[in-house]
Amino acid sequence: MRERWIPDARRNAVADAVGRLLMRGHGTFPGMREIAAEAGVTTGTLQHHFGTKDDLLLFALEHHCRRCADRLRARSEEGARSPRQTLSAIVTELLPLDEERAAETSVAKAFVSRATTDPGFAAHYRAQRKILLDLLGEQFERANTPDPLAAAAILAQAVEGMRTDCLLLGPDAVEVDAVLDRLLVA
Amino acid sequence: MRERWIPDARRNAVADAVGRLLMRGHGTFPGMREIAAEAGVTTGTLQHHFGTKDDLLLFALEHHCRRCADRLRARSEEGARSPRQTLSAIVTELLPLDEERAAETSVAKAFVSRATTDPGFAAHYRAQRKILLDLLGEQFERANTPDPLAAAAILAQAVEGMRTDCLLLGPDAVEVDAVLDRLLVA
DNA sequence: CCACCTCCATTACGACTGTAATGTAACAGA
DNA sequence: TCTGTTACATTACAGTCGTAATGGAGGTGG
Image (tube, rainbow over all chains, first blue to last red; front, side, top):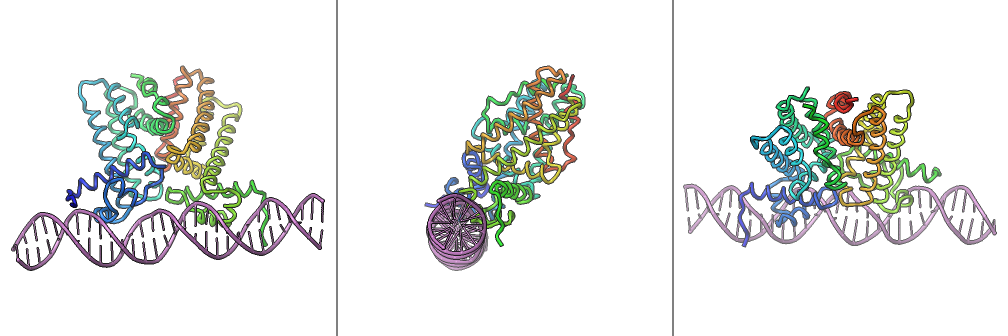
């Protein structure tokens, strides 16, 4: 019996499969048949819902960017917390500390190299970066940090390094509090 | 007439070719024939000097790590400069502002994803990171910065973000001085 | 001169790649 | 019930992949 799916659900499931493969696979983009197997479908399904492979990968990037941005906004809007607590929550949300965030981090890393030439992928990097910068800047402003935008930029860049450190060196290699201590001179 | 080469020179030339391809190609590792063409040799030569493709890539990573580390040490040992000037020189040396540094940055980025599973590649990340941390910590110590190792760690992580920002958003997206202002509280 | 070894070029092969082409089941509207 | 469209599955194909295999050219020690 062939299951019928809502197309959007299928696409999201496939995007998740790409994330899982990127997380535990060896860095390079998986092949169509590998993606299909992980998602429990055939390559025909992939061809039907996404035309080409690049479209599929682009959608997967969009998918994970959206999920991550949603969670970042949620952390940012959890009321009644100090700027420092909110900043810590946002930064921690970006670290690959569980399966979902590890997949998102792997996706982000894998697509960086791709973005150097393909403008479609670079646009997502820019967009995701702006979201993060705004959220961080808001908190630095709330904490009366001098030049909050500059502080946000530095933290955003440091987060990039913390993500790869956490991915390659393990969770013990990053200390969020130490970074915030240095940046929050309040 | 077939030219005779010193094997080491060949290997280094091939490693440079990999860097160039990674810089202007679309992120993913180039194929053997592409590498051979860029280096002006045949795949037979590649097979002779490096056994397998992974050996070739690993050597290329080593090659670029070594070159980069040498330049970093050179910047660090240019005497009669303030800690701030030296830090600025070190950080700037890591940004992809010319062909050679752009190639190194592309190499580093491309190998990060690979390093998540392959321990051989991860080892180089660790080593390169330690070199940078030591050089930065030395300068922060010279500048009487409180907790110089923590400051070095933050700067090293921020550099990671600045490299990708510079690569994807252009050289104008990074402001080295702003970062140093915030971190050098002297 | 004769092996011998290094350096390199060519060819070939099997595995794998993305995707086009085709067929089929299930539902929707008329 | 007929028809069309959507959502798959299967097969096939042309191309690329890394690499094994083979052979030749040039330098080197005996």
